[in-house]
Image (cartoon, rainbow, N blue to C red):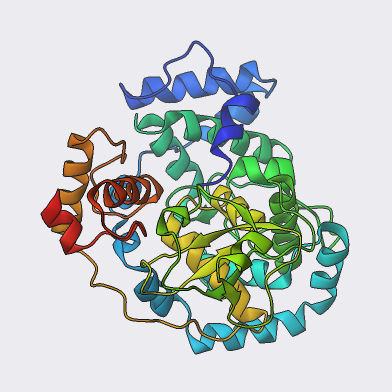
Length: 386
């Protein structure tokens, strides 16, 4: 999901039904909303002509089990030698574009290459869902109307300026479009005509897609020419309660606690957090402020960590040291754990078996309370004690 926080501010709801109910009535409400925003009835009727619900979208929205994988398994599945090779080839092919991005936005080519690869395999797999239908389906569904109704309005605005075909534009099930998968609001705010043809074509123009992705990251708060993630070595004596994204210390402070970069040196003058995606016995990373910006691109902890690591690999970093982490809990045990955490007053969000940020924070709190190493990695020992 992209830029959810901006959606309501840019396209606040009208008095029309926000979600649910009869679909035809809902579409009439969307039409009235679009007309109230200054679009002509002719434009609005043309945009919504043939609009229909897509049950495949709702099925995909309810089934995101891929994020239940551990970081190591997720990274192994997504980062292949073929993708690394294609990343190097595209870095060379679009050298001038990446140099321009570096000058204008200060964003490393590795970061954009990683998202380009993970989102669409460098533009090869952009999705086959009708984007308009996906957006109206999710806007009608009452799970997240505050995100998707404004995206429908943004798509109408793109159509009005000639950059969206409601009958033919296709993309991901959640409405993202193009080679780096941007939602309509992203395109309205941050779309760039990088190739100078007068249009923003994120599906067919790699230059437009890369420049737009770079502008979006910049708008989200990317700090120019700063790192985002690097692998580190950690001592067994580290205070595990200080690990995780909630604690930020200067790299000098971390160094005094025995932490060092596995390759090169820690960034000077920056604050960072120690990230242990699979606990103290698994891979270890120092993540910097730019790492947090990536959560505005995708909310999944395992996805963002994988993308950040992939970006580092594309910039020349070696494969991470896997270590010997404790076995991951099964999906069933993770759900049991989440229920136990909720019973103790923690907010873990949906009981879904996914080790997200809220569940990690709750795990770390309970580990500390129970006298276990508080590294935020759920184990059978923790489950037993709870």
